Amino acid sequence: QKAAMASSTATSDLECQGIPAAQFIENVEEYLAQHKLTPDQALQLLQETYSKYKFMELKLQQNQHALKNKLPEIKKTLDSVKFLHSKQGSEEPIDTHFELAVGLHAHARLQKVDTVCLWLGANVMMEYSFEEALELLEKNMTAAKANLLKVDEGHSFLRDQVTTMEVNIARVYNYDVKLRRATAVAGGAK
Image (tube, rainbow, N blue to C red; front, top):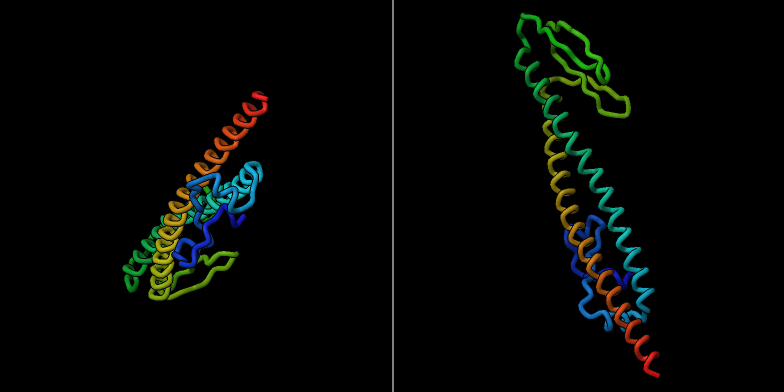
């Protein structure tokens, strides 16, 4: 496995995310001799590493999708809290609709609203003052954007590693075919 991955002493942020850099195989013959592998063994190793990269890519895509869906939800909640905060102290009631469940909405008339309740996840709802809610939502928005950027960088790096592995697999496979042909020609010449 280590033969298919680079052993770099310098750690970049991307390697800190647990994504090892793939080693490009310049010279297949030297690579096989250095790691004492047959072409079949090398192909198996490279395929295993390739599969691991593809699995990591799937996980990153899932995280990316979840974060992209989370950002608009946080923004919508933040805008709602800002609106309610702007109406704080007003004697005029606020008519609104809110979502109880997917596709199920309710009508409400709000008067003298001083706090807001936010879902935190895992079936937990907490009541906050407007200032606390705004601070929490701004912090969540900033964290989600930073996480999305980190996941995007990791995904881009991972795509490069997948491409490197695909090229390595093709190079070793072609070397193996060339070797077998040479062996067949040498065997047929006798």
